[in-house]
Image (spheres, rainbow, N blue to C red):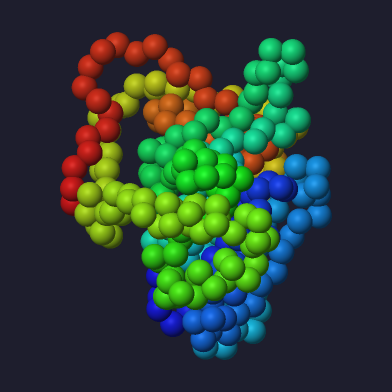
Length: 298
């Protein structure tokens, strides 16, 4: 992350402490001598709705808003909100994400049994799109440090080495913004998060998987799309994310279509990234044989 300026997007669900986390990070930036702009969106947060906070720092910042592909880091306190925020990251940016899942009421397909249609926790799948994913069970780490509710401070601890703010700026910001009764628990959670270590992201052009497909690859998956839920070209996240260019648009058709169905490898990236749960990937039985994907360094 650049030392002279940066952009951080924090996302999560109401009640997780997104706004408090953003306030602490902004205060740490100010204490480090930077100009800072911050803005939050939390209209339905009290009912478990989405919360986001934009934070930008530098020598002179005119606006807090972070455009698509501009965030140096995304800090997600909830798993699916982290997935949804991937388009905000710049190439080479860092995704810091909690393994916590908080399915909304609309995701429950069986209200009696508790079955939900909600993206599974799959950090390795995310790394196909974002090489630098730092996923942590922040709630468990915070509980071990003294208070599970301080999970947002764990994620700030993971973020802190990426930002050019000294340790005393972070500690002063936590002390100034966290209620006194929870101060020590949050300090301990922050320290625990800062101590976590993650595999280094591969350097550009190295260590990335390179696909080797036979001339006529067998289809190992099929994609089902609920037309009524798909926003089509107004979203198109799945079209941009599909590594095999399976998805696209047909003339005069608003929803996404499987325009190359035989190329589907059932990687499930489209299903995981779809913010409207409009896509289901079904894996077909295929004969045992060599892998379609050979990972090697380039």
